[in-house]
Length: 98
Image (cartoon, rainbow, N blue to C red; front, top):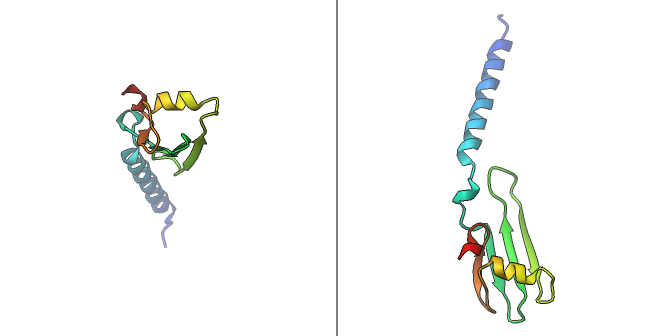
């Protein structure tokens, strides 16, 4: 019976190459993304940001809340291009350039 190790190594190398090619094809360029989430302002002026990560990395989601007395509140409002009570805006790249 012949040694199958070279064949196994060749198969492993082919699978690794295919995995890298697949990951590269699924990669999302930051420049192509309009939004990574959504921002909602409630009646009391509290802004809730719901954001998500971009492929190919691990999937991650987060929720951040900013009350009007938060020191970062005005920065967030500016980043969103403005937001009013009851309004929903996209959040992320390009949003503050409105």
